Length: 386
Image 1 (cartoon, rainbow, N blue to C red):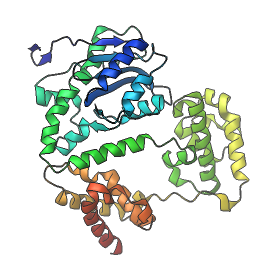
Image 2: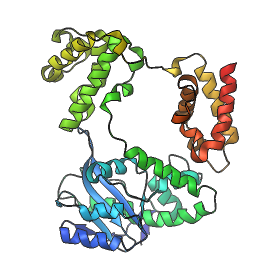
Image 3: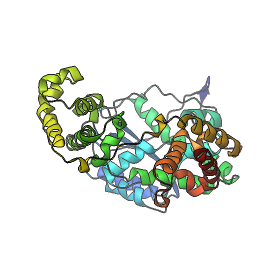
Image 4: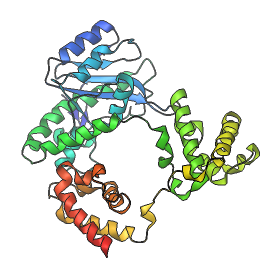
């Protein structure tokens, strides 16, 4: 491999896979290996689901760029994903898992994520793939094609080289990280974190609770909150049915404003921030949903959303927990990996609003985090009783 000024100058030799025969061959060969590297390229601008444009596969010998737009049947690749004798290595794979789940209803198992391994080796959370390659191989990857339209054909050679590099260097990176991880106590923790990603990727979209993800939903009560719940449920179902991003059905803030104001006529929509196209397409339906919510008995209203972050004691409690997490965090770990703000919030909410329900344990009280989480829980219980 030739280098000049730290830049990769070599040309990666890949095979373009656009026929059933080629796909079967490369997947059969990959299934003879113990470890393969995977990546995907996709577009997600106006759609609810990602649009798969390319699959990259490197088995240590063959570098393959699989064209899903040319292949009617991707069963051989799905079988590779499911083959539990082959470990699939990915990097920062949450979005890739969503692609696999949507297109194949099959996740890569077993799976290891090099970003998670790097986290447990003390690399900062911002150490992405390119930075890790730079660190271990003193190579600067060309990221000039990162904004490619991966659904376009033909793809340029620069774009294809960019895509190929993401798996070509992934296996050598994995081979560098693995022995370092083996010298630590965190191997099982890495597996646990990867399994968590897989489990999360399998969770279906939940229109019934879509309203809980709308900003400021906690400010609404009674018929207004019910209106928002039904509007958010309708919007998500519409987004899934039409494969449209949620905000391309109706913008979140406009939906919230409609529920809050209990809009009664389409003439009010413009003042609430609705686009004219949203009014024309969905105005009557939104009015209908709000009208129906107004007729419901109060005992059918959803419970008020408890926004613990607005409570006076929340900030001081969170700061105390963050300080404690810094004290107990093992030296090799980043504190965010052990107890991020999100995980601490989850723990506080569990104690304050869920009565420490043992059937809904927060992540800080599960798995490798449990002994550290118990210390944080003890502090939280002390803070709570003051």
